[in-house]
Length: 543
Image (cartoon, rainbow, N blue to C red; front, top):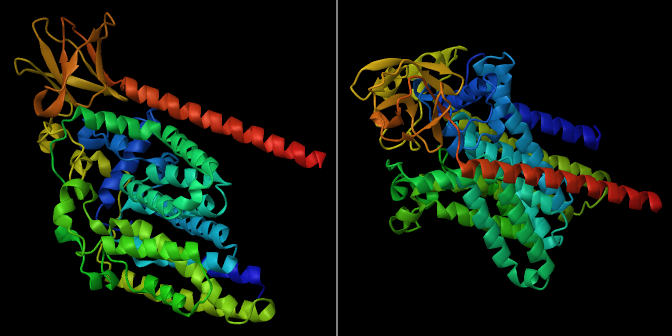
C-alpha cells in the first residue's frame, strides 16, 4: 500500500469510527440535545420567514421569543438549519451536522499540526488523537455540547496561529484570526480560554517578540480585525448585559464541580481520560529540543490541573462562576495535548534510526496503527458507558408549544419573565390595561393587535421584552412608546389613542452599527485578499 493510500485509509477509519453512533434512524441523545434542536428549528423558521438573522428567536416559548441567537453564536448551526429548510428531517439534519463537525475538526487539526511540524505523520497522529479523545466524544454524544464541539474545530487553528506568531514572524496572521473568529462565533467560554492561551504564549515569548516591534503591531492589527469581524455578535451582547434585567443566577459551585487530580484520568463525563496522556510519555525518550511542542504540552497540562480541586475555587467563584464547570477548559487542553502527542510520535519515528526510505515508512505505519488502536479502545469505553437514549423527533415536534420552552436554565430570559407556562398559554393574547383581552395576530417577526379601545392606556403584547422592540400605529404610522413593564416580562405598548398596533423587533442602534462594522471589515478583507493575490501573480509572471 502506498503512503498516500495508507493515510487515506487511516483517515477513513478514524472518521467512520467517530461517526459510528450517527448511523441510526433515531437521533442521538445528550444532556442539552433538545435545546440545540430547538435552536436549529428556530433558525429554520427564521429562514423560511425571510428573516435568517433574527437575534430574538420567535419559535421559543410558544412564539413569545427568547434571545438565543443574540447571546449564543449560531455560526455553524446554519448548516442543519439549511438542511431542514431543504426538507430533511430533524434527526438526519442533526446527524449530518455532527458528521460535518467531526470531519472539519479532523481536517483542522491535521492541517494545523502539519504547519507546525511539517510532518504528515505528526499531523495524522494529532488529528486522530484529537478526534477520538474522550472529552471530545463526550461533548458530542453525552453532553451534546454543540457550542464546545463546534468551537473545538477552530482551536487547532489558534494553536497553529500562535506557532506562526512565535516561530514564523507572524507571516500568516490570518491563521490566528480565523481561529479566534471561529471560536468566538461558536462558544464564548472557549473563546475566553483561547484568549488566556494567547496572552500566556505572548508572555512566554515576550523577550523574543519585543525584539521585533513589527510583530506586535501586526498582532494588534490582527486582534482589532478579529474584533471588527465579530462585532455583530459581541457588541450586542455587551449592550444587552449593560442594560441589565437578567436577574437569574445560574452559576454553578465551581468547587463542587472541580475534579480530584486522579479523577482526571477516569472514564467519566467531564474527564480527560487516560489515553490522551499516554502519548506524552514519549517525551521521556526524546533528546531533541521541541520548544513549541513542549509548551503545548505544558499549557495543556496546566489547563487540566486548572480543572482540579488544587485550585482555590471558593476564592475564584465570583469571578469565574460563568464557566459553570472548571473542566470546560478541556476543550482547549485536548487539542494542545493532541498536537504535542502527535509531534512527539513523529520525532520518535525519526529517532528510531529510520529517517528515510522504507524503514521510516514502516515505523510510521506501526506507530500510527498503535496510536489508532489506543484511541479506538478509548472510544469504545466512552460509548459503552453512554447512557443517553436515542429518540426520533418528528418534523413537527416543536409545533407542540410546551416543547419550545426547553431553554435549560433560561439564563437569558429577563428576570420579570418568571412564568414560562403563562408565557406559552398567553402567546396569542394581548392584554389591555383593564384586564380584557384581544387577539394577537402573528406575521413573521411581528404581532398585530386590532380594534384597541380608545380608552386603553396600554396593551401588553405576547413578546418577551428585550431592548430593541418597537411599535407603530398601523393607521397613522406614528411610533409608539414601549417598555418592559408588561405582565410576566412582556412588551408593553402605550397606545396613545392608536386603534391598530404593530409590534416587532427593530433592533438597537448598537446592533445596526455592529452589523455595519462587521460587513465593512469582511468587504475590506476580501478586497485586500484579491489585491494581494493579483500582486503576487503579477510578480510571479514578471519573474
